[in-house]
Image 1 (tube, protein in one colour):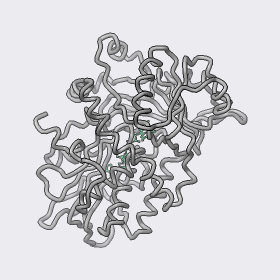
Image 2 (cartoon, rainbow, N blue to C red):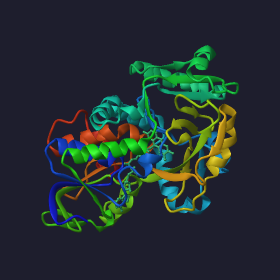
Image 3 (cartoon, rainbow, N blue to C red):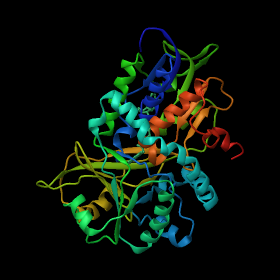
Amino acid sequence: MAAAQHFDVMVLGAGIVGISTAIHLQKRGLSTVLIDRRGPGEETSHGNAGIIQREGVHPYLFPRSLQKLLPYAFNLKPEAQYQLGSLARIAPFLLRYLRSSNPASARRTLEANIPLFEQCLTSHEALAAEAGGMELISRGGWLNLLRGSSGVASAEAELKDLAALGIDADFVTSQELAKLEPHLDTTRAEAVIHYRDPWTVRDPGALCKAYARLFETLGGHFVQGDAGNIRRSPGGFSLGETKADQAIIALGPWSKPLLDQLGLKLPMGIKRGYHQHFRPVGNGGLNRPVLDSDNGFVLAPMAAGIRLTTGAEFAVQNAPFNPVQVAMTLPRARELVALGDAVEDRPWMGSRPVFPDMLPVIGAAPGIPGLWLNFGHAHHGLTLGPATGMLLAQMITGQTPFCDVAPYSAQRFTGW
Ligand SMILES: Cc1cc2nc3c(=O)[nH]c(=O)nc-3n(C[C@H](O)[C@H](O)[C@H](O)COP(=O)(O)OP(=O)(O)OC[C@H]3O[C@@H](n4cnc5c(N)ncnc54)[C@H](O)[C@@H]3O)c2cc1C
């Protein structure tokens, strides 16, 4: 740890959410220290599919009909798996997720998502331009490949919602596809959607590191340390020799254990996910990420190769490493694009931090003065980190927030 120093704010966790929050606080004149046990952006924020999902306003819902649920119960579907050994401990979260997946709650989440997602491109652009990170970003959107006709019907409803929000997305013809992705085999696709507005990042970890360098250029301090050692003191918070008047928990999937330690119980769960890179074959490859939505994997062109990312694995965070979803989806992925050898010997594994209503918690920690929360960004933390970082910085500094913050309050779980 650094020599004894006192800051206005300490931000615990240097993923995309913590880094972005720290930049926005430092820019607003608060002396800020960013603390992580690793380097910036080396966990979940490095391992994702790299899509800044301008269109991602619809929440992922838990299946509610028995017909849909049964194949998941038998672990037959590659897009969602669970570990039996974790089931007893994750059951309370799964029940809350099921209960929150009703149409009224999904609509509330959609509406609460709208102002956050509206900010996602501009808030990234502001940071990336200043951090020299724009070269990591492409503006070609991404493709959603639908193998079955039932997916096409629900996609039509989703596209209608997106059109009402002014988001540019539509089915593409095979001629258009051949131009967009000449090496993508779409013979098994019933239809393909092109979301044209989203941006994609070819090395999300490098983008986080560029943002972290910007934070330090602005006068912010990065310190390596274990957030588990945080202590409340009369003047605020201390972590070893580092002291601050206020603290923010932005530990992504590790936020709940620390909150439990501080006596604050929130119903957060995790959805684990895996990735592995594959070498492109010849001059083949992809120009933009492609989601196979029937199998829940994404193939994303990255600096390290074509990154295959998997859907959700429901398990406790320290459950055994079990990359069965990579094994299940790889043959399906090879149907879409030629993939050479794996770049790494074994897949990477990470965890999406999720609340049952699929909204993050942003705001004051109930009952703990000076403590703030910014985590639970689920499938969209890369997308939303800069926007929610700005929102929390506005709240902490007494500025008018860019949107109504009530839907993201931890208080919404009172009585759960
Ligand atoms: C397979 C997969 C694909 C995804 N694809 C996308 C996508 O395309 N687009 C998108 O928007 N989102 C995507 N996501 C989700 C996104 O990656 C996450 O929502 C986001 O990275 C969460 O960021 P975070 O800053 O909250 O957490 P993290 O990035 O996990 O950061 C938390 C930090 O806390 C630190 N930490 C933990 N414990 C301690 C401790 N005790 N002391 C100090 N530091 C600690 C960690 O080292 C880490 O740096 C995907 C996720 C997965 C798993």
